[in-house]
Amino acid sequence: MLMKEYRICMPLTVDEYRIGQLYMISKHSSEQSGGGEGVEVICNEPQSHPQHGPGQMTEKRIYLSSKLPSWMRTFVPRIFYITEKAWNFYPYTITEYTCSFVPKFHIRIETKFGNDNGHNDNVFGDSPTPPESVSHLDILTDPIPEKHYKKSEDLSCWESEKTGRGPLQAGWRNTTHPIMCSYKRVQCSFEVYGLQGRTEEFIHKNIRDILLVGHRQAVAWTDEWHGMTLDEVRQFERELQEQTNNKVKSTQNNTGSASNPRPAFSRSISVTDEPSLKKMGVRTPTMPDSSQPPTPMRLHSTPE
Image 1 (cartoon, one colour):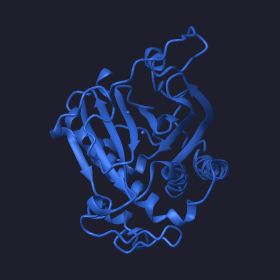
Image 2: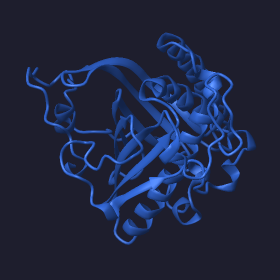
Image 3: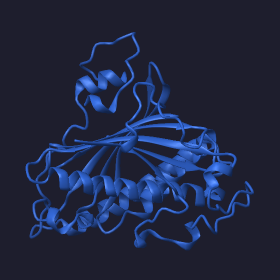
């Protein structure tokens, strides 16, 4: 089991990013979907938390067989997906990932957003993450995979007409206003003998790349989403989810012939067990109601 905390600053406010995050996730998912791979939204519905208030719960399937390293593709089925469940009680979110093929695979991401430049060492309010496990990611200077680079998303060239912000320059995290930080405490586990360490490092490397690309895009696309209301961005989200689902399903249906059938998965592995849901204050049909707010969740107790 490997745990790290990532801190990613952006030249935005926490209130602004509530819209920017939803826009970025929807557009990014759409861009990454096609050829039978990408993100299929299974569920997206309101949910309430006794401590964190109203929010949204989503469940997605992320198809990514071709994106796996060659040594991992040798033992997974042709159609392989990760199941994601997320509880967004902004500015606090929890995301959990499990695997449709490997039940001992689990990622848990606990996120808090703050209007600061990443200096809060106990933002989760339980116990500070050891300094050696904290990684500050810089959306301006940290490298990303070449395939993800776009000149239009290079923040050294970016300028926002709507906000007058940009371009970012060296040392921007100490001089830029407004500024906010996305704190992400990430725990990953892959309990398969002989592959655990190698796979957990591979997972963290990919999480780091995804966080850098996603947060760069949220900033670079500021003029596309800035000024939208929550209702408007939710409508945008619904429209892109439908398009994305259609792209994923249409290709899978075309390739799922009798001579090349899909594997017979009856369902995905459950994303989280009942005790974890109780801790989150989420009720299931078999759970008794509880008037007491759950204690704050810790990443160590057991992902975006």
